[in-house]
Image (tube, rainbow, N blue to C red; front, side, top):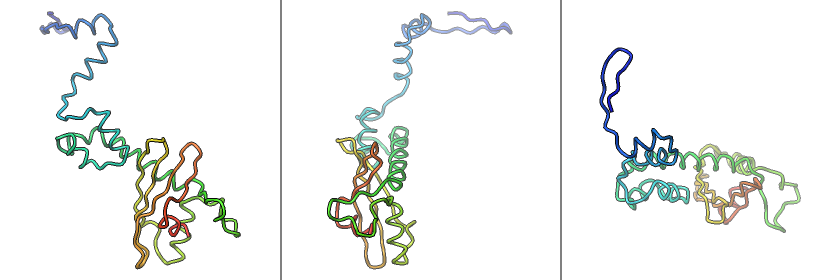
Length: 181
């Protein structure tokens, strides 16, 4: 194909089946063409990389499974890591649910997770900002939320379940129950 610009410059372009399909307006071919341009240097598809990151694996573990480098998977992993961070922050604003029979007589059932942990840690003269949060999606659609902390001699990792549609959090272990006070 010979193209001539407004300034008279000539360009030649090899026409292949992909270009013909795009010129015909074949949107399906256009989508496939865009996907074909991404050179995959991984044994895992981008969808699989993202699913593994969303399920809580580290970029290093996924890169090893994909038989590639962390740098090669980060374009696919970064949006999911941002999603995990967003969910962890959102979960801290979720209502804290206590199991039946453990709600206190002081009416603590309406607190958010972040408020409960902040109140407990400040009472121990510990900065709640020192808690490291993470979240990953479980197969049932809910999220596991972890809080890694150190409060004086007490160091641990607490596990919670976050139900995003209901916007509530429940403690899954003794560390979580201790952390919320």
